[in-house]
Amino acid sequence: MYLSKKPMKHKFKDTILVLFFLNIVQFYGVHAQNTYPNIDDVYTKHQLDSMLRKYQFSHDTLGLGFTYWAYSKNEEKIGNINNSPITNLRKSMECFHTVKDLPNFYSVRGSLGSFLMDRTFMQEFAKEYLSDAVKYFRVQKQYAKELDYLINLANVYIHQDNFVVATPMLHRADLLNKIVRGESFQGRLHSAFSDLYSREGKNEEALFHISKSYEIANRLQIKWLEGVSLYFKAKCLAKMGNQEARLEALMGSLKVVEFDINMFQLRKEVYDNIQDYYLSKKNYSKAFEYADKSKKTVETIYYSKYESDLRSFTEYNLMEKQRLIVSRIELQKKLTDIELEKVRFRQYMFLGLLILTLISLALLFIAFLNRKRIGKLKAVELEKNMQIGTLNALINGQELERQRISQELHDGIGTMLSRIKVLMGKGTPIQSLTQMIDDTCSEVRSISGNLQPHTLANFGLIGALEDFASKHSISTPAIIFQHFGEPTDLGINKNLMIYRIIQELVTNSLKHANAKEILMEIIFTKENITLTVEDDGIGFDEKTLKTDSNGWNNIRSRVNFLQGQLNLNADVNTGTSVTIDLPIL
Image 1: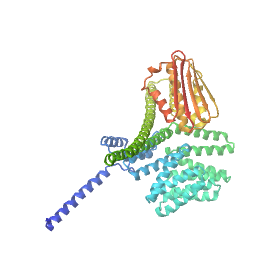
Image 2: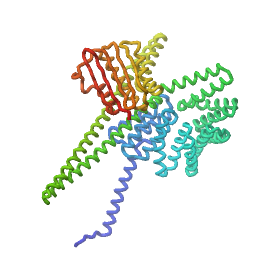
Image 3: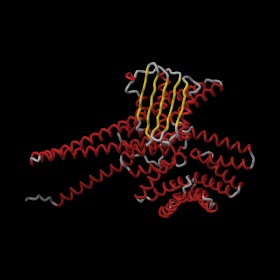
């Protein structure tokens, strides 16, 4: 065989060209990466919006992830109560998950968990997100990031009085900081230990760690840590009976947190403790003053965008889990298709062997068995497709609900506020403006109640339905609610779905039935739950019901998701009756 050989000088030139090409590729690759926003830099809203439009136009998901992350960081730095970094963090996390950028995905997931940890009703979500981040960075041996999220995770367990889990976490964090040597981490660790020992009644140990955390916070100018340290100190002094020193510590904490927008939650706790001090001293005027400040702080928190995003996060998390369920079902469907192809291939192989070997009876029997198995697999495939369709319809229904609420906010609240603004400039009497502001507040409460009924979380499904019926008791038609059997707690998510089903059915009767009376009934047994909504209105012809009706699609999607059965009886003379049977799984 003949082999051509290049001279050495030609080989050298080729090597130089390859290295030059690789350097160019590396330079442009690094340059392209550096065009993404730095999450620690400060940007204007116009700059961030421009970057979002650019990356959306170019379909650059990684660029969108960094931009949403930078957006959340800037909102956090601005510290405006009407800015919430939660939504942008969630979008950033989804972008990084899409492109499989795991380090940034778990960094954002841990940051989101850190934002959720201060609210009691969000602590389970916080534990899940922080645990995911800690586990990932522990495997990657990125000790600084593991330490950052591990301290926050330990604080969540401390707030839940789960000291058995929190204590070893803090000891591991202490060992990690001997490697990382971060002074701010050390201050946070002392703060966590002080809270732990204070809750365990070890006040002397708690005061020691408080002094250390305050010293570090003061030296590094970490204002939030100063405020927290003084607040923990006040709690310890209260347990030790030193009330005057307690007040001094509370006032010191108040100086730090009173004008910091990001520390509303701690400010409210400080106000409550100062009120408690003055009540113990029977100084009721001072106690009332700080009680009023606490109340105003709570109202400010409740109506802020930050708190609104927290309340809607539960629904987002439910939808995220539903998407995961859909993904698993789609994966199972693909595996079923692969198995089906394998079975078909075996079938063809057996048929070929039948022709070649003339063992017709044996091969025909095997082919029969394979056809039977194919039929079962097709039935499984059909069932999975139905489940996917049900879940997709449920998700679409929830998206339509979001659009409806967005339209209500735009057409209702937006219009009312714009009108108030115009009338204020025209010298409208203050009494008229006050009435319009009260109407706007009522509209906000109504929209908030529709989004997530507070009575459902506080009093359960029966309490929420009783409240729903009572709100319509003063108007026509009359709504009657009755229930039988021992109520079964199905969890907040299923209770919310049942509530939405009954709410949609009653709304249909109110809009279309022209009824004098509407009955809501729920019956609990050991095996199932039966829901009934009846009216004595004009009814309708079932054949004229539109198949693309959003309301009925939402009802059927939720019933299918709960694995229930819906029966509809409608008559133009006697009214409408809807009965739904739901199994207790």
